[in-house]
Image 1 (cartoon, rainbow, N blue to C red):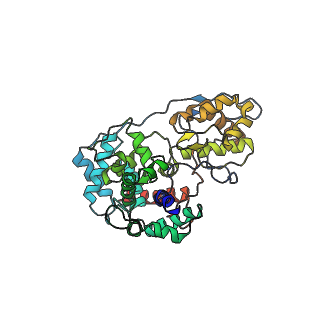
Image 2 (cartoon, rainbow, N blue to C red):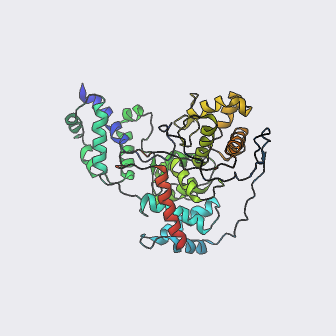
Image 3 (cartoon, rainbow, N blue to C red):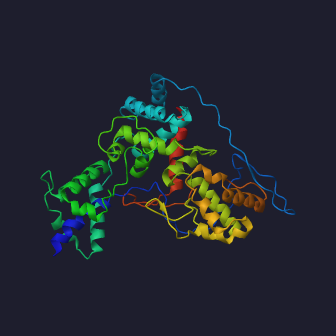
Length: 411
């Protein structure tokens, strides 16, 4: 009885062991105390009349933000030379990296400035140290330990797991030996693809979803890459699936730069864009919104930048703590429950900062504080992964990348 169950169970447990630090947001982070008011900064593109405690709050008037003029685009030769000067000297194949970075910029028509190039370079250096397929120290051990942990949930002891892993794989080695030899997530992705072909029942048990969700030199989400190509052109001939391209240097750089830079955000510092890269687009803006809601409602909220609850990228009907706090404020805001939900559904887009909900919450927060409150705040998220052996947060990640960005700007 045990052997047939294990043949379907073990591969699923094996691949689920490789989980990277999330780029998307968790459903809700543990509740924390509302922090002191952040450093003030007026919302870009919004005119807020001065508050007067003796009079009703005046209306907020949105003003379209002015876009700075784009510098002339260099030729590929000139652009690659610009990038090459900024890449750390210790990186190998610096010219190849410079070509892939500049071609990603050109394909996405991103502003070819030193600040932008350095933002991409800083993330690559942080995520992979300029190694296209970065090794994960102790990956085989991590996989086995996670496998034992998950099998224990089915009352399967480690010795039975080890026996099941003696089954030969396609290359003649046992699955156990393949696990012990694993070095990178790309190798794990290949192992999963083999299992899908060899064990269709296993793939069906997983809903035909590959559990390896991020990869490449910028650790970009595979689902982001697939969604991005729905509306954008990929500049290279495809070799296999979009997932396969994510694990290449050129594809990982292309999709990583798109995730980092190809969206409008009027942050005063790239620090907040680096936090968004780790926590999800507009997470820094949304965390500031949560701080304003906490101030107005008196509730303790998780400042994680996730205004709704999500599963598999889809908003759930179940109300989040932020939405419940907003419902308490509905009368003061002049918005009903459906209007609040309507605007919260815009949280992953630039449009949220022009919604009635954002404008009224931030204007009232300014009024209560007696000064403009911050429009961006580093999300408070603790990173979770079998690969992480110490306490790391989104704030830690953003500041580490920002330090690398500053070093790049000095080059």
